Image 1 (cartoon, one colour):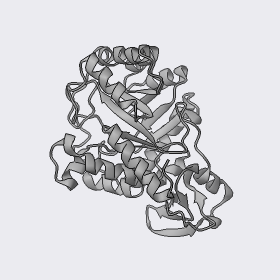
Image 2 (tube, rainbow, N blue to C red):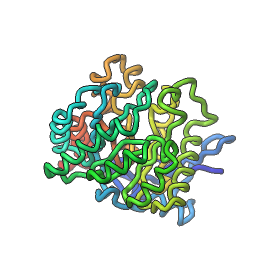
Image 3 (tube, helix red, strand yellow):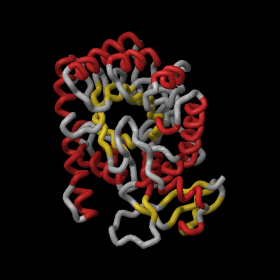
Image 4 (cartoon, one colour):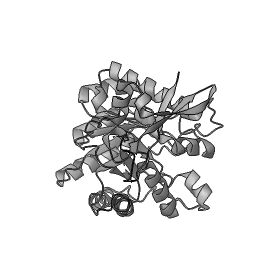
Length: 336
């Protein structure tokens, strides 16, 4: 099988034959052909068949009510005692509500999670996870928040309670694999779903993760998860993917994925990048304290946007919004 990775560019002096990447803010005039047993090769877009050109260049469908014609910011709100960078900060409902309202000034989506999935984290019961998340979601909706709210969970009962409370998107770090009833719940709800790549469980995912080719293996896995979700009754236009940076990947695995993220546009759905404050940023940036990894997180977020990522999941919403606004102004010459 040959994999087709568009080579993104953001320079406004692009070639006249360049196509918009996923209908967005990047373009491409060439693609990189990748095979498991051959060296990469370059090909001009004119040599691609019409269907491949359409898939790579067509605009993505709106996701969760948000158009995908500009990068969208997903703000992370962990209502947990043990998340790797903000554990216990927003466990109290009033603290969570205050943080969500603060995020709402710059975020396009609020992502609420009640179970830490950091490496080594222990599983939380569904009842406890529901008790942490559903009341916060209900309070936000009751207070008039009309932004899309995603529920970050791998458990169907937690997702169902969150939907009842007002959540509008499901963000499952196991791509519907952990709870075998999740696909049915998601399909019945009609909510959009983000399918993230991961291996094993949080307790074991960082124990010597191995891939034959991490980029192509993750791509194949996400292609399979998309097919399974569609077969379960979730329309393709309600699906997005996340390559799962830091979930069952070494530092080198993460860097390989980040350097060729544009491959995932070939799957034809919006792509989310979640790398905020993660361990590899601390390793490369020599910062052990996760809360002090903002500069590195911004660098990775903007690198992802430069490869056409439609959604960026971050802890630092206001800072990311400012960085993104300046990035867009700098490459277009126009202040948005």
